[in-house]
Every structure is written in structure tokens, then in C-alpha cells.
Length: 88
Image 1 (cartoon, rainbow, N blue to C red):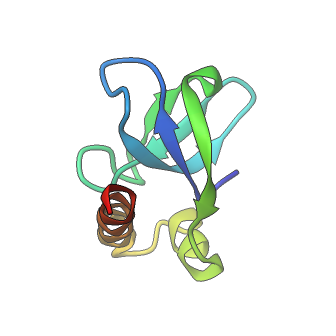
Image 2 (image 1 turned 90 degrees about the vertical axis):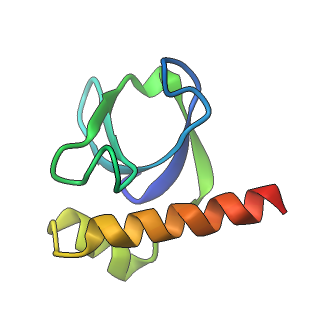
């Protein structure tokens, strides 16, 4: 599940797109690269997100997992491009 894009279905951030950066037994941690970074992700209930069919590339997932420098910028860029595709 790490690296997949997801859509928030509930909460004050409803309809926001994030990237799943971590998952544990009870929660999913998501980041947008701007307000919620990879080093400080947002905790979400798995019931409150919808996983999208698209995901980051293998190299990008490795960046996120290893907290590589520039991963937040990469996430921001990818989310910006995804939003453009959705609106088109």
C-alpha cells in the first residue's frame, strides 16, 4: 500500500489527495509534501481513505521509505501533475 495515491473521504481534509507513506495495524499515514511531510505524516483511519489505482514508481517509493532528501518536493510535484490530469 505504501506509495499509492489516496483520496480522503472524511474529515476536514475531505477530497484531498495524498500519498500513503506508511501503514500499521490501525492507521495509515499519508503525506502531501507541503503541509504533511514524509517525516511528519498525517494519521488517517483506513476507513476514511480511498486508495487510487495509481502509485509512485519503484524509485520514488524507495525515496519515501528511506526519507531521502527531496522526497517531499517529489510528492508535491507528482500530486500537482495528478490534479492536472484529473481536472483535464
